[in-house]
Length: 463
Ligand code: B12
Ligand code: SF4
Image (cartoon, rainbow, N blue to C red; front, side):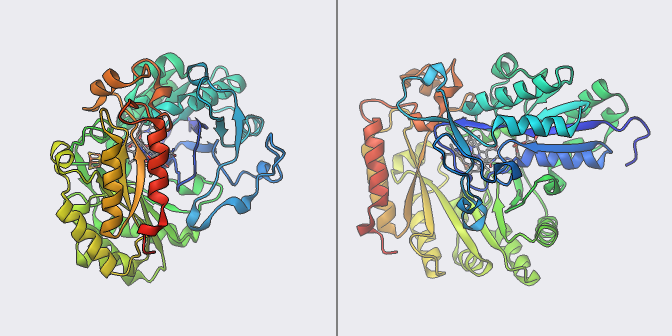
């Protein structure tokens, strides 16, 4: 679509992560790249700065405080790896936590140079991830404001959606857009830069378009969404707040997107970002993987998010193996039938055992079948997690602990506020799963350390 008015210059920013620990597990600012694609298609001039970029040329030979060089070689296979990071002072709220706090991503001086080089835009759009990463968002907006004090900054994304009032108060953004912000964004663009943006049709369909992956300096993996939202309502999850409802794309569309991206960028690793890749059963993925096999693309697939166990059957397991699935995480959460019953019955132990059997029969090793176990839920006892670890190993899979992060607006939030020794309702830094925010006598930090060791004990694993 050609716009007859001034072509707005938009700068999109993926901010730093500030945290005790962060690893680049195929991290991508997918929401922002989808918005970018839409804005480009509508005629905007879009540029993108990624504070997390491990391929930033300025990092070559860059020393961190320990005098260690950041080596590109630290990137690992399949498109994951480490971020550059520097130790910074702990924020006051977590100053008593005996762990280093870090800024993950490019040093601020490099980001400032990039901002200057990009030239003054009409508008800056910043995305956000975990609620407890907000200091990174505030810092990135602060840097933008230092270089371009008069340019309006709009903040969107996950933190902005889950905590809009906090974001308005602390992020430094001129506007905070919560939720599926695309319609509001186009309206706002009209107000700020002029023109008929408001009249853009299909703005709400943003996530059907291909993300603007070409904006990345180096693309190591292809992030793919086959669906948005989830039909389940687990008490610990924010899916229905972030995207109410559940929509699936046509297999043919997703296939075309994977084919296009793998050819254009010569990338082999495909990473599913879906909330619920197997919601509604395994037929969709069977169809998709079949289509991929016919294209002869030689790809590897990863699902770092847990998949619904009920959707796995022998046909899907074989299809996954044949298509080159390398990273597999099953969402068991707990082997306790009472827990399973209370949290929406998305799986039971019989279904779990059958799924592991199907995957093993298809050729996946125990090590390859990672199973998420939630740890640190309100009033949960460490013993329950211990039992689940044992159970998962016994079933022939590998336990992976996922520490609970309390999320405002979810069903478990109020209970979390009640039991947490931290002031989680006023300070999002306390949502950080590293802190074990709902720790108590029955589940201490020491218990967590012991449980993690238990997951790694190899004698129960058969490799
Ligand atoms: C994919 C995913 C991951 C991936 C990769 C994440 C990444 N970005 O690289 C992996 C598996 C690594 C991961 C890990 C974790 N995750 Co996660 N993850 C997700 C998931 C399922 C999807 C995120 C996504 O990309 N969605 C798709 C895009 C298109 O959506 P989007 O980013 O929201 O963008 C849209 C809008 O927000 C908006 N928008 C975005 N940016 C902007 C900017 C502007 C200006 C505007 C106007 C609009 C806008 O428009 C977009 C299009 O609609 C979310 C759940 C969810 N539904 O969001 C959880 C979620 C973010 N994760 C969560 C958690 C807890 C974790 C873990 C801590 C889990 C654990 N216990 O181990 C880890 C920690 C990660 C770490 N330390 O690095 C929580 C967040 C909790 C919190 N307190 O904030 C969520 C919400 C899941 C939940 N439990 O409900 N995760
Ligand atoms: S099945 Fe997964 S995505 Fe859906 S509500 Fe439960 S935890 Fe969230």
